[in-house]
Length: 60
Image (cartoon, rainbow, N blue to C red; front, side):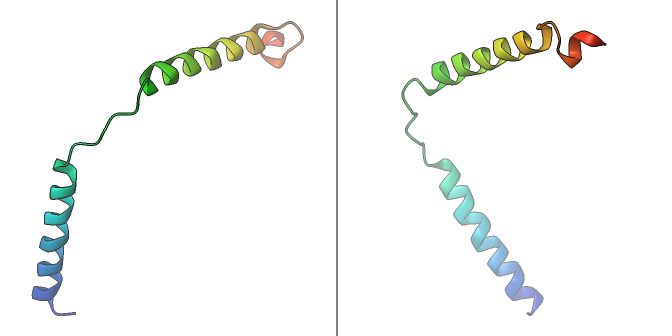
């Protein structure tokens, strides 16, 4: 492929990506709250598993 054609295609694709990035996306409702609750629940479960007697973490 000729270098000038490759560069022109690169500029065209970059312009498309910039235009796509400028379009605002609708935010999902309560996704942040749900994600936060799920994350803290997973942390709590992990801590319970790590501190349960008889686990490998407690043996060390």
